[in-house]
Image (tube, rainbow, N blue to C red; front, side):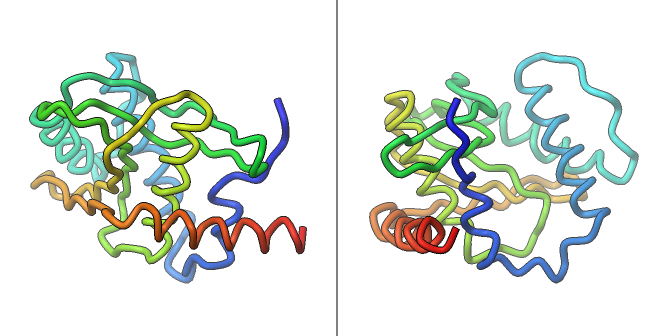
Length: 173
């Protein structure tokens, strides 16, 4: 398959990484793996005790909200725009709407998230023909008390901003 930059690679110059420690990266990777494996009924290694609350928060939300899983961590491509991405999840929710969902272990929102979600939604439609009515991040709470959903509604605007950044990326790299 073609080697295109990922959505994350394109956005990284605009992401405040000053608070991203090795522990944050490890936590995010471990929690993502556990949540998405749990969703698919797959085995996953036990999480460190201090990460258990994130998984509890996820399970509460997923059990209450997800009707059907459509796609989990699948690499998607747009050959015209020369970009790829791997969204966490696309699911049909219990209200019948199809959403792209990205899990976050940070409680502090990032300005890049709506651009990331818009790019992933575009990739899902372009590569797999999956039309989503919305996209959101789910900030999983570490104490197991639930999730903070961020539903990004200005898809066209966010996608256009991402496309401008992508064009600059291709120009310079």
